[in-house]
Image (cartoon, rainbow, N blue to C red; front, side, top):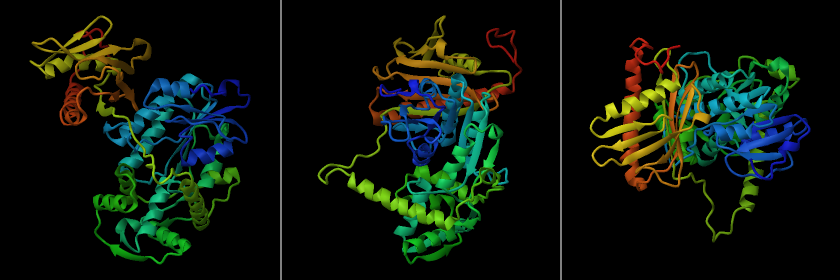
Length: 488
């Protein structure tokens, strides 16, 4: 929380917006400010403005920061997505990163006494074979509900609005390709929605008890395919664009093609393109009817979005530094984040998994490393013969529970002395899913050497631990053999 944060003296109900500095968050803040005191959460420092009473800096990979960010909130809105990297090296799938952020948000909301969580997810097609991106959206929904705070979910497809990343990718394709290669997936039907409608409906459900625990689809009045949408965009822009159908164009080629043409990061493009194999159709628009809202037609939404994009482009151009100064670029710290998903044996919890990891690792690295664990669960992984610690993990009892175990990396030959990373094990989803994660770890080795040695070795170790847990799932739970590792 910044020193400028006046949120402790607010008089109206407080809404905290996770992702408040993003495309939808900024627009939503203006709408919510009509009824609430609005606090935005972002990764970087931001000053209050006409709509946000305060901004709080928080990284949702950090539970303590999430707890501080949600203090005093009656309502909490979750607009966070983790497709772009937050560290120089990220090991792990974006869906696992999303899961940890959502779990921290839900735990923090429970602790803060939040009355309602509002989540903007994605339209879910009627199939069990979901893309990883859409399956992740469902997992986030489930995770936000896990700790008992009522959740209201709005599911949307492509949000049409100036400044939106998905819409910007589409318009760049249209603007940069005089002859457009249109793969088969461009015939997939979808139902976009205007950003103004999304904002209006998100605002409508805040504090409305009839919407607690409900899930709603939102969308424009009619569906269309991507090819039609791109042609509509070209027409509005006054561009003549020839569509060249290509029957065989794999998702891998599509990802590469879209990324090269638009300049969008592959990490952002890949999950979006993968989802294009599904029809993204709103099954009902009952929330719009409840709110008395007539959904905006796609063409009008497109015209407004393109007009807004022009304004934003002019503003960005006027704010650029002089030509003799370099344009600032988005950077990520030279730290490591590594997340792995595993399955716990029946009856086991995160506390057991932490103890088992410390017991198992020296056996897996027999002859190389031994583990020294004291009565406080602090652990040193020591190299045989020379007796020097590779890593020192200090247990955090005040921040640990049976379903989440936290250790700080406080020393060792492989750790940068000034950087205190975190190692955690936590249960998520059904309680049988275990996430092991290293956050904000600063390696002591030179970066190139680290990436090709210690980082790869860590990946191998966690894959081996996953296999160990899978093998343990086949064994019966025997509390008499290990009294501290209790069965459920």
